[in-house]
Image (cartoon, rainbow, N blue to C red):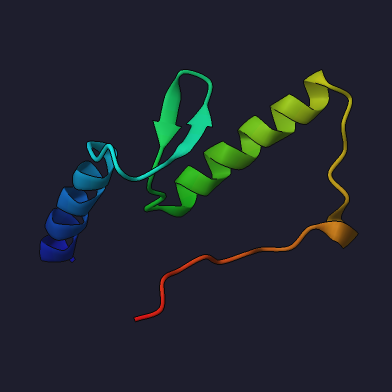
Length: 72
């Protein structure tokens, strides 16, 4: 696990410093890579806060997960 963490950390840093890869703008920062489940929890907390501020609800029946990837 330690060696994997070293390599994945380098990948995350490379993605964060890359100008050619678009990210997700959140407040004052741009997220280009989600590595851990905690990252998703933070994004969902921001979504919840946003919805509360604007009196919006997320319709779970219409919500789906979409995975985008390049074919190998």
